[in-house]
Image (cartoon, rainbow, N blue to C red; front, side, top):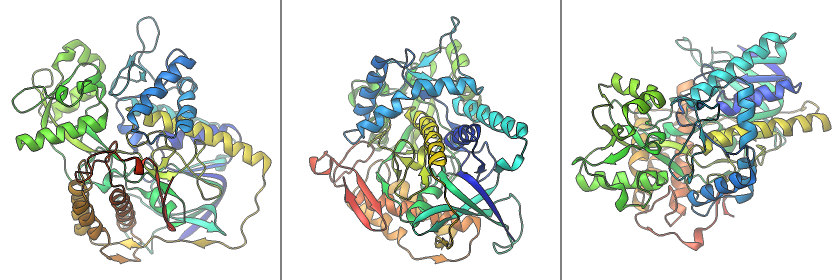
Length: 536
């Protein structure tokens, strides 16, 4: 079974970036198809707790400059300063647009925004809604998008397709013309050949497919984060960049985490509010690793926790939220308190066991701030894209900032291109298929190997071990949902490990025990495509 849909813009992904781009493009008159891998709310955005880092003082030049300085410090010398300046400068406008679209933020009694401070920030600049900011963003934008759909005279101009997994980009002479999808309906029976195939022929295709957390056995990411867009872009020849830089969140709950399932994240904002890290003897340890203590950048805190766990031969450390105070905890972090109680932990009375988990991908599809990739009419926004804002280590809460600003900018770019260019349908097209990966037991071993060998601490031996596992040629052309996702995980894992092996230094989130110092030789960004590696 198959069907064909034609549209102006295809958006793949229903997180912050995809939803906001869809709204802005539809409001400007474009015909939109938004395809979601599962249900609309199930995205990494929905799990985000902390908030959006954005310039204060209504986006004043001084506030923008200070935010840029903090971002540059965190990025360990690899940030694209022009891209960072452009994205940070768009922060205040983003907050204003989200308010207009019904996204809720916390305010003080005087009506001003209640701002939080997180690790690496020199001041409070994180706009948030309690400890469920991502859910507030997702809920607000989905409601806005569905309201636009209901109000549309012609429903075909704004189509929302849930439970559609992209498995191939549609190409013609090196130019992208949409994508192919397989049905991902839950509990659907039948072989892959019997499942409905949807081809969306689009003049512009936006990848907003999120991150790669499921490459690792322990991650804060939902099960949908399998690197789909990154793998597909690579398959059609797009340039990827910074693939060695994976951020591990220092404080994921150590209890109840199973391979492939999200480890509950305990927001960095709790440390910004006063929570402290303790070892198994209830001693604070962060000050011996960095003067900023618990408010050091994530790479430093994650490595410190890892080192303490190694020294003490313990599987976790402890996060004590009690210094924040009962009233502030219940007001600012109700979701965290409630979730911890589900695990039998009363954070008002006891410390919380935590350990690092794969969290955010600094690398991805090489894109400018407007989402342009190296493939004409293929755009990438949000976590699957890499603009250079994050460098070797993302500053906390800059991810939602980047996703939102890129969404606004790609909408503006495509609207301009729609006015200035008309595109005729391609006479010939080709479908480039990913080889599909089998052996789920082997996939679990790969994820565990990535966590152990391509995690917080790496070296040549561990990276080569991971590559050996990645290069195991267990492939088939059986296009089930499970196999498509596994193929994407396998490819992304291989690219991360290979890029990490080539970078013979330590920088930001990439720490090599065999090369523990930074090197001027590697003060460049690695680009990888099917043509090989380049360093710029």
